[in-house]
Image 1 (cartoon, rainbow, N blue to C red):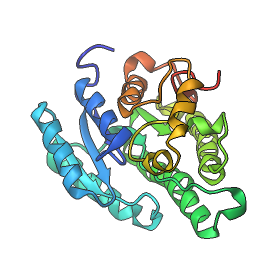
Image 2: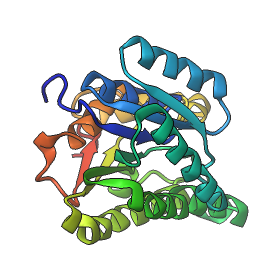
Image 3: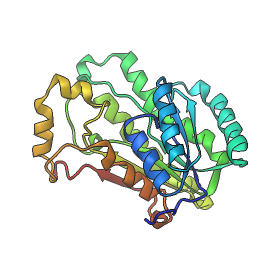
Image 4: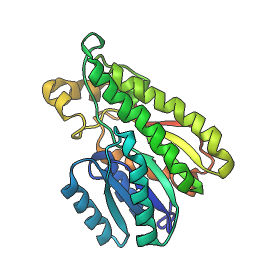
Length: 257
């Protein structure tokens, strides 16, 4: 993918203030895109990302959003439209990356209904309706990339609720690809393997040996990093990936092959 391939494109990346979302934002900027990132509570981190993206010569805006609160999506998109008009003098954007999320860890026997509902609202209902409400202002020929998990293919006890919602998102993405294909919009999944970042910090801190186990079961011999993922997302947003549609791409370094 050549430098500048996304010039003139505007990407909306949820959870762009940290981790995979942050790396994705920078990879998209490297290819020439401008950014709208969202954050749930870390406004200072989001402002730092916006400033860093600006230093690279691209326009960027940070907006607050809790993807688990679907009742807030109409007002969120009102703010998106305001930003598009004010900053870009446009009424549409080109790329939607549904990245924001949280995890719960617990065996099926110990998973509370509250924790289960949080996973539904964050990873299934949130992705479904945030995408639905984006479609009227997502430009024809656009891109949707949804972030799933390697845990939809392989299993670690304790992730049933989280992985089940990611599995639902994968099915949703195939249906989305079918329904919006007539507008030239593609929809794909990126499924990271285990990533050593703040998302998994608690699990890794609780069981330090897990990282060694994962590395031993990964063809490339290590646990993944946030920077292993953003380039895959950026590729799927490019014209080079225009004929990839409705697909799940696992970026795990070859876990459990």
